[in-house]
View 1: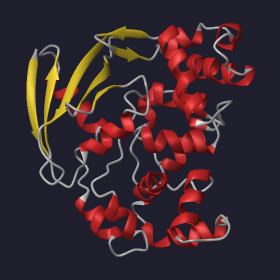
View 2 (view 1 turned 90 degrees about the horizontal axis):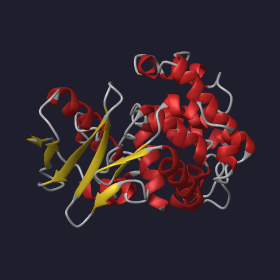
View 3 (view 1 turned 180 degrees about the vertical axis):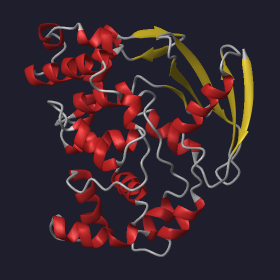
View 4 (view 1 turned 60 degrees about the vertical axis):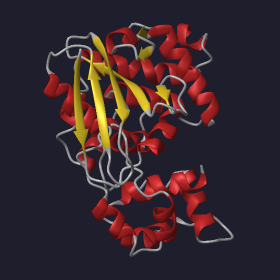
Length: 289
């Protein structure tokens, strides 16, 4: 076992992070202890559970990270930092929005970071499962999928590997209440990743436009899923999925509009939110949760 302590720049509200993570029943969150157990997907195919606990405050954030062993500590700590976006200070972003029409929701939700899903492949699979489903059933279906075909360690669930997913049949997923198409999409992505046709590591080095172009070639992945991967798989800072119903509803509510905004109105609203459109999206979502 190894323990490392980390101090980052505030504001950073880890309690809001845990609140969001707790929505997914697969996540091992303890809000009272201000901690979460993170599944770390080792390159070897094995997994390690990393325990992250907040020991500081929103203004002065500090964390204790407990690792199962001392192997590759820097690599594992860097991954945790990346997941929780500790390297991205929120101060400048927050000050930017204090000068915009989103000031009220940024004051209310100060220190809310973008956090990544725990694994890039899991990010895509989860996004496909969640397509066109209400949130409650989306989490239920994802939970069935992972607990049936993934694996568990120390109370933490790991998504199945691309190789495992590629070998599934549509009939097996239909038994979990997947639609025919959704089952085909999930298996298809597993096949492309396991064969090397889709290189998820390479995507992290490409521009947003290149990633969207690469992903939308794949059956079952449209612009919404590609943008979701950029935002919650790679943590890209300047994405605004304006076709998202939640964002449209949030803007309608915030600006007291009689109808949902048009695409042109969304473009006009978002002009002053660059280069932090992803944070505008996140805080708009939070404002109606």
